[in-house]
Image (cartoon, rainbow, N blue to C red):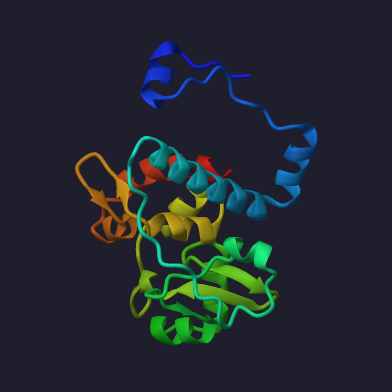
Length: 198
């Protein structure tokens, strides 16, 4: 078990004697169900942060209650775990990506397999592809493959790329920094994000 130093305790602003290690059962569950475990850690972290902010008098961001129309018959107890895609984000399929990139569908599948194009499977032959990564015909944002490699999962890599992140000189979307050619800065931050969920 890992112990914290006095300085770390003061920095965290709450006393931590030790961190609890997961049981063998929990470790096996994480290995078998990594995506669900990542989502659980993210949700737990958000809930903990909100509670901690409330305890010290900070205001949590105001989030409108979710609209469950169209969700189907999701039990009330599970509704807090329903994740909605960003309404502003355009997610496209293989045919649309092939058309925008002026390449074949086979090439889209190959680019997705090698992570030149970020995509994730929702069925055996169905990919979800974020459109923002396509710059022009035949060109995607540089550095995507390295970001996916650093984080370990294409969908999580896309989440990282589309959330504001604190860099040395600025707070910015990593995707925008990649577009500006600042690949090394993004690759330095990517493993930190990846270890949060792996």
